[in-house]
Amino acid sequence: MSFNTAEARAYFVGLQARIVDALAELDGSPFLSDSWTRPEGERLQGDGISRLVEEGQLFERGGCNFSHVRGASMPASATAHRPALAGAPFEAMGVSLVLHPRNPYVPTVHMNVRLFAAMPKDAEPVVWFGGGMDLTPYYGVEADAVHFHRVCRQALAPFGDEFHPRFKRWCDEYFFLKHRNEPRGVGGIFFDDFNELGFERSFALTRSVGDAFLDAYLPIARRRRDHPYGERERDFQAYRRGRYVEFNLVFDRGTLFGLQSGGRTEAILMSMPPLVRWRYAWQPEAGTPEAALYADFLRPRDWADETVSEGAE
Image 1: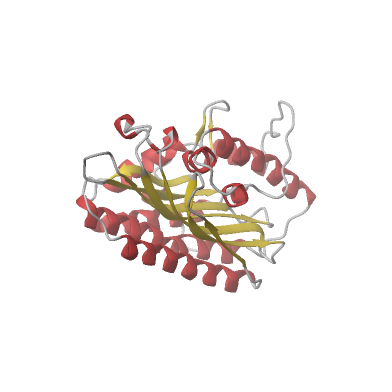
Image 2: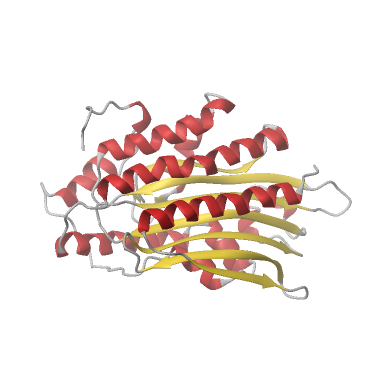
C-alpha cells in the first residue's frame, strides 16, 4: 500500500507545532526546541524535533516529540501482532507527548499518534496506524473524566459508532499495570496496528484523534491549575507518579520500540516525571481523597455516558 511520506510528515510536524504553541501559552514558559538527525550508517536513521519544558509555571516537566525514522529491521515490539514482518525494513513517524503538571490537582496526560510502514522483500509496503490519549489524575474529578472521554468519543464519531467503545476498552486493557492489578488512570482511547478503513480513512481517524487533544485537555488544566495544595498532595502525587514510571518502562510499546530500535534515549525517556517516590506496601487511609482515587476512579467506567451536575467540580 503506497502512501505520501511528505504529506504524512507535514501533518505530524504541524500537529506538534500547534500543540506546543497552545501549551506554551497556557504555561507562560517557552518550550526548549532540540532538533536532531541520525545520519546514514547508524542503526536508526532519520530526524526529529524534541520540544520540552522543565520547571514551568504549570508543567513541572512536559514534552512533545516529533520523530521520523527508518531502520533496516523492525524490532519485535513493533510487530507483536504482525510476526511475519519481523526483521523487515521499516519507516515510522509520529508525535508523542506527556505532560506532568506541578499542581497535583491537574492530571498528567499522554497522547500519541503514529504511522508505521514495513517494507517486506518483494512486496508492497504494509502500513498501519496507532495512537490515542489517556488521563492520569492524582485527585479525581468526575467532570474532568467525563469531559475527556466525551471529546475522545466525538473525535471517533465520524468514522463509526463502534470505534469509541472498542478503543476505550482497548485503552482500559492496555494502560493496566498487571503486577499491581490496577489501571494507570481513568483511560481514554487507544488503538494500534490499525488500517481496516484503508489508508486514507485510517489516517483521517488518526488525525482526528491528534487534533482533539487540545480540546480534551486544556479545559481541565485551566480549571485545576490554581487549586490550592500542600505537601500531603505533592507527596501522594510523587507516589502515584511511580506507577507511571513502572508502566512506561515495563509495558509501553512506544518506549520499548524506541529503546530496542536504537532511538534517542533523552527523547524516549521524556515521559519520565521529574520527582517520584516509592513506598513499601503503602495503602491510603479509608475515607480520604487519596482512597477515593482508588475506589472511584481507578476502575473502568463508561465515563462518556455518565451525567455530571452542571457546575460540578
